[in-house]
Amino acid sequence: MIEIGKSYTVKIKVEENDTAASVGSGTLNVLATPKMIALMEEAAYKCVGECLESGSTTVGTLMSAQHLSATPVGMEVTATATVIAVEGRKIEFKVEAYDEAGKIGEGTHERFIVFAEKFLSKTYSKLTK
Image (cartoon, rainbow, N blue to C red; front, side, top):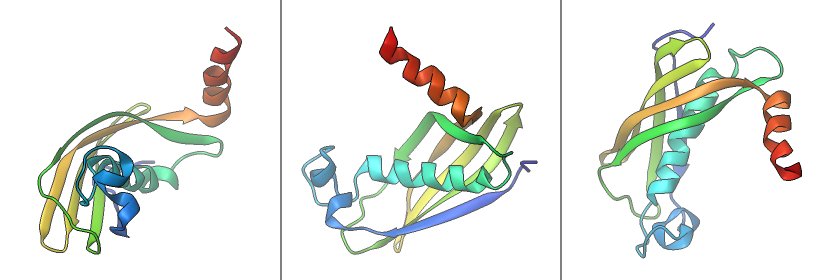
């Protein structure tokens, strides 16, 4: 069972390949917004992963996030996802990211529980249409 308030935190040290210049989302050597969002998503899926029945996983369906402050290469970043609502297969999270100087991002994220095999079968059937 997935409980409201359950949270999980992940951490990285920002490297050159995490920058906006490297991922193509800008020209500066600072943490890229897509990397911050990916870190938030990682925290969310890991938060509930151990609560799922065998053969199921979660997929991200919605992300609403603000990138509040730039982070330089070499600084550590943490992202935390906290379950704020569960409705059937839909799970909603509050997500936040911090570097060593303070909050750099915040928002909400939504994931759905799916059966991996069925999900992949449906997805890959697009190739035969």
